[in-house]
Image (cartoon, rainbow, N blue to C red; front, side, top):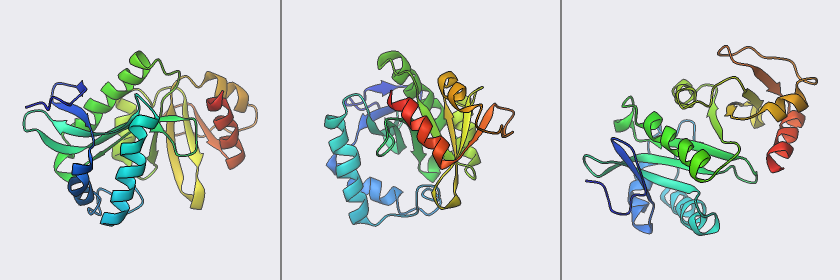
Length: 211
């Protein structure tokens, strides 16, 4: 039961663009405290409407090839969450991301479609780098990022605002580590090559991504 508007498919899933008619579905998703625990908390319907219009619908035209897409279970045609490939707000860094409704947790859906999105980014869009971001407390998302190949030998641990650590995995970071390694101490986590970045270090990473 794949929607004809779907543009990227896997064995069980498909992605399609959001439309204004999806406001009810998205507002319901953002009412769930567990789903939004690492997304800044629940959002009101007006907040979701603003997010849908500004960050999703307008983004399609402003940034062709990138966006946030509803994730559909092909067998039922039901929306189970969303996957994204877009720029971090105010940055040149391209990120892959995913949010699933609780009914779709522990199904492998996040990994299945996130892997397809990463392949699309590298193969179809020819992107040089893709980042994955998850809270250090969000172990499930960290595992997904590792499974799709973003937790390999080059992994950055970034200290964010409000003392909230953010886990970043970025492919093709040889240039970044060359630039920063002599200034930063290694940080052991998940048996990967790690760097603990200060805000100053993060600024240098941003400079590399902007090149």
